Length: 91
Image (cartoon, rainbow, N blue to C red; front, side, top):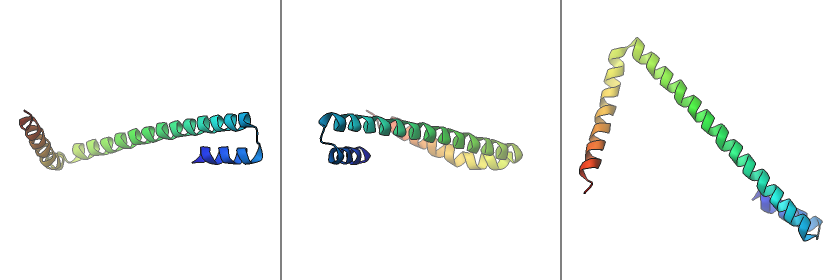
């Protein structure tokens, strides 16, 4: 959408097709770099969040091991059932 706006704006200001083409390519490149930067930053933020949650869970389990086992048991059981049902349904 931004690229189209740049192209239309430059086309309205200048009738030279080379200028319009260069402006469109420049806008496309800028948007691509911007999207890449956002994806990279988002990935880093997700990794940081995951590590913080993992550390919090490990601290919780270290403080109260019984609760850690109790909360992990249903999740492990569900994962085990899902794994066994997916392997048994394959021909």
